[in-house]
Every structure is written in C-alpha cells, then in structure tokens.
Image (cartoon, rainbow, N blue to C red):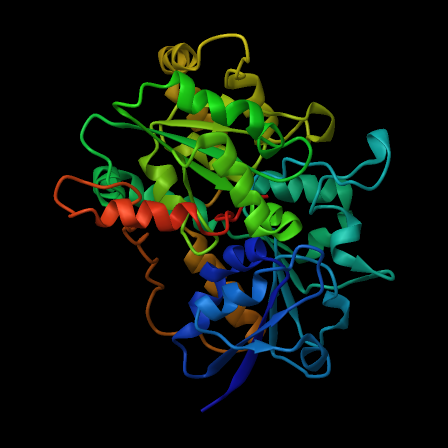
Length: 406
C-alpha cells in the first residue's frame, strides 16, 4: 500500500482552525500519515495546544524543515519557503476584508492576496492556492497576477457547515441552554486597534446596564490573537472587570459556529465571524469599523454600508429593536453570497485538489461533510441540575479566543 506523509503547518490557533476541515479529508485514509508542526509566528501562543486537542503530535519546526513531505498544508505564509514539499495554501479568514499593512495608498494590496503572501525571492512558494470565491481570484489577479496559475476556487468549509446547521437552529439553542423566547446577543471581535475588543470598556458595561436581564443572554467571541498577544489571564480579567461575570466568554477550545447559528443579534466589527453572521438571519450592529484599513471592494465593506453602526448616545435595547425593524434578509443574503461561490462544494473540491497534489486516487466514496456538534450548555436550563451554570462559570474562567476569525 502506498504510504505518504502530509504536514499541516499551524502558525496560530486561527490558522489551525481554518485547516481542521482540510486535513480531516485525509485523516481516515490509511495511505496518508498526517503530521503537524507549529511555525514561527508572533501569535503562535496556543497553537501547539490546539494541535494536541485534535489528538495530534507536534513535530518540532527544526525537524519539520529538515524533512521532505508529499503534501504541505498551510493557512499562513511565514516560513513556508523553508518547508520541503508541494504546498497547498489556504487563506486564514473570509472575504479578504483587510488591506495589507505593507505598501502605501493605492499601492496597498489586499491582505492574503498580494505577492508578499505567496512569492519568495521571485518564486511562487505554493503549488496551489485554494480560494473561496471567484471574486477572490479576481482580487488575486490585481495584487499578484503571477499567482493566478496556481489559484483554485474550492469554496469555504465554515460557510458550508453553518449553512447545513441553520435548519437545526433550535436544537443548537436548546443545547446552549437558551430558553424559548430568550434572545442571544453575540459579540464578535477580531484583533487590532480597529476591533471591537479595543472598545470593550465602553460596550460591555452597556450590555449589563441597558439590556433587560430577563429574556436576554450575552456571549463574547474574541480573536485568539488577542489572548496570544496579551495572555489569557489579562484578557479574562479585563472582560470580568467590565461585566461582573455576567457575560459568557468562549475559549479557544470552543467551536464558535454553533453560537453564530443560535444568535438573535450580532454586534461585531470587520472580522470574519461578523461577516459569517450575514448567513444566519440575525440583525447585525457594527461597533467598530476602521475605514482606512478595509478593502473597499470586499463583502465586509458592503456590510459596513448595510448594517447600522452602534451609537454610544442611544439606548442599546432601542438600537437592537431598530436593527431588527430595518433588517433586510435579501441585503444580507447578497453579502453572504460573496463568502463562497461554491456553496456546499468545499469538501468535494478540496479533496480533489489534495489528492491531485499527492498523486493518489481519491477514495471510492464521496466525502461526507461533518455536522456541527451540539455545544455543551453555556447557561443553566430548568432540567440540567445546574450543569449549565457550572459550564458557564468554567467558560468564563478560561482563556478567551475561540474562532477562525481574521
């Protein structure tokens, strides 16, 4: 039997989460041995723990760059030129909302789609660049036309998992501990000075002071880079100080997607999770949006022109009611359609690409997309004997992070 080795390069927790649905397409094939390594990155704190939660062993980076692999999977760029093996590169977020920090004015490329992400000393590092949407290919052509030869549109795994879970929304809500009629307000923050996290001190106290305690639940998703940069303890202390423990905070071991499926309102920023929220039917309020750093052609920019901005001068409950009244599903659906141009097709297309690079025949059965698991309760229910309360307390004391958010 042919035996090959695939290396999954995990730069950060977010990158690892982005890759989980990719290497899962290989995990059950006895011909393929999947290995993991953690690459150098300023935010790689927690990446090794992510791999171990998957049940994988971490191959030291120094050893990984000395060996030859039959396939390399990555959602980041740093250090890939050192790895020996045909590399399939994915993006680590959705929508390509941000502009690259390099360049000036009109010379700035879109983050993830410029030459600095795929070219090293004049050569293309990946053999394939897997994209979610045809518009991403168009954007890649603007920023790095030489990479069009390796671009392949495969769709988006998180898009497909969320879409498949939406018909079972009530089951996810019940599993979280939401009672009938309760509204879940979900806060979603990316990282950086333009993020919602940078405004938490002004936003979080309002949730406790202005939203009726009866009938509302609140939860927070924070980009893992925040915990990697500041330390989980510091982030936890900041959130607890401003909410007096009233807010449920998801840690990096939690799956953010069920909460998005269950949410009644999303308060977010320019991060990926907020953009995925356009799929769910939940009205969205934008609490932060850094105009100068955003790709004006991105779906995130379109969302900023569609969703109302959170105001510091008006009651929060009234703003949520206004967002619900003026919510137009068709407008949000048009934005959501920009996430993937191959809805439902990620597993089939991605597996085909991987096996082509490996030089192996695909398994003689179609890939079966996994169903989003039901989450453990974040809040107590009438019949859980307090388990939900214990779970919520434990969740509030864990390191915050919790999503493939860019």
